[in-house]
Structures are given as C-alpha cells and as structure tokens.
Image 1 (cartoon, rainbow, N blue to C red):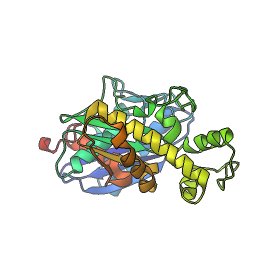
Image 2: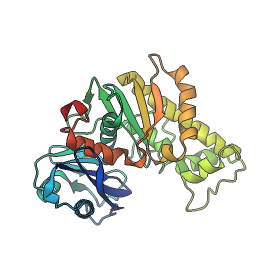
Image 3: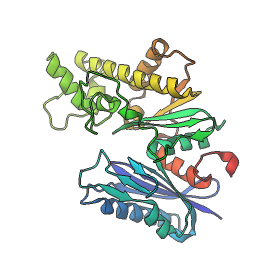
Length: 322
C-alpha cells in the first residue's frame, strides 16, 4: 500500500491529510496558522500537523511515498519556501517547506505549489473528464487563480503564476491592496478587504445603512447578510460583482478555459451573491467563448485534495500518470 501526504498552508489555517492509492483520506489534522514570531514557527506547525495526520492514519511519516503542498505565496520554488507572505505579519519573512517535509517523510518526492495551483490540480484530478483547459479561482482572504492550459498547470519559473488578485482592475486606485499597490482585484473583493471597501464607499457617500461600520468586528459576513434588505449593503455587493466579473473576464481572455471553478470562503459561503452577478456581466465583458462558471464541488478541501493529487501524479493532477 502506498501512502500520500497533502498539506494546505493558508494564512488562517494549516491542514494535512494522508491518503491511500485511491485518494481515500485515511487521516487528517489541522490547526491555526501561527502569527509568528518567525517563519520557522509556521514550518514547525506544518511538521506537527503532518505528524498528527500520519498518526490519525496509523502510519509512520516515513511510510509516505510523496507529498504535495498547496501554500500561500509568494513562493521561492528553488528554495522550497514561502517568501514574505502578504497576509501574515511582517516578522514572518521566510517559511521553509520542502526541505523540512522531505526530511520528515524521508522522500525526495515533495511538490510545492501555490494554493490556487493546488486547487486546479484537485479540480482536474477529481473531474469526470480530467479537462485540459480549466481555471480554479479562489475568493477568500485573498484572490488568486490556478490555470491549466493544454493539460499543463502554469506555475511560472518561481511558482508564482496565477496571482491574479494583483491584477490592476481600477487604474484610479480607489483601494490599496495588502501588498501595498493600488487598484488590485484583491483590494476590493477579498474577505479581508470587503469591509474596508464598504467603509471607503460609505465615507464617499454616507447614506443610512444598518451595516455596523463602526464595530471593530465588522466583516464581510455583515455585508452579505444585509444585502437585499439594506440599500447600501446591496450596492456594495453589486460593486463586488462588477470587480469579480472584470477579473474573471481578464482570465478568460488570457487563457480561454472550458470551465472556471470558483472556491474560497467568500464564494463558498455566498455562492449566489458571488456567482450570479459574474454570470450576468460576462456576456457584456467577454469577446471570446464564455466558459462554464461553477462553484467548486470540493468545498474547503479543494487545496488539500489537490495537494494529495499532486503527490499521486508527480505534481500534475493528470490521472493518466497513475
């Protein structure tokens, strides 16, 4: 029996699973992603969670033959590490991953991807058709995309292809992204930035609203819950639909996918409010064939299942390699 490890390192949580040759998950573990003091603390948390998943699966870590990792970026593939992640504290400058995991599992078969590339690998692997041209978009604490063209997952020389959340959609730069640049898609539509966007819009036009804008716990959840019954919240969600449709239209024009799958906490928790406005607007924004637009069927597991699929298929998600 061969065993495979998958790791999902996010800005909020770190997860790991162990699966067998049929991709059946035998054990899993997760914990919050450490906020410091340094990147080594995050590395240690990843190793601890991998050990815990192996224990749940009743295997020794060295029984695993390969590991896939889906991680926040930016990545340094040559070093197998995350460098200066945008959504973690500034004290976390470097998170070593492939070396420590390779040592723990005693295998050289460790594949590192950004989380959205792991997502498209998972979507492709678990699709009935194993499509050669598809995109996975996540709208969560950040925005990103994993792209597969002609059967090839696009990683880029340093592993950072697909950072579409940092496409400049607004040349006027009304909002500043967490990366420090203005007008990026992520600055408007990520879970972290939706409340900031609502606050800025309200400051420009301070109309009556039930949104708790002054509450320190004001979040994207409040915006979506009030949309439909509160005019201002409805306006904010309409604006999000505009920016999301523009971002996905750019992806369609760049890569011509047959299907676009959407995941991430913002989309998964508000599927109609996220997907329907995009579908409505793509017709007027897209020049070429419009692909199918669907919510991921893998839910919160899309990245970690993609990481396992990567481990099983040599980093591709192509089932023909099994």
